[in-house]
Length: 62
Image (cartoon, rainbow, N blue to C red):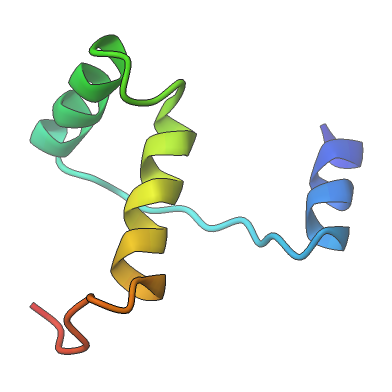
């Protein structure tokens, strides 16, 4: 596992831990079961990219 993390860091990725409410986890799991995402990681990466890299994202915090 350490080798995988090292490779990810070398590729420019950083690991972060977040806590999500149960209803968010359930919504992510439903999106996975519906075939929208392969994993929780993929779903969370998509959501984070949309929030922070999208040109249409609202720059003001909610």
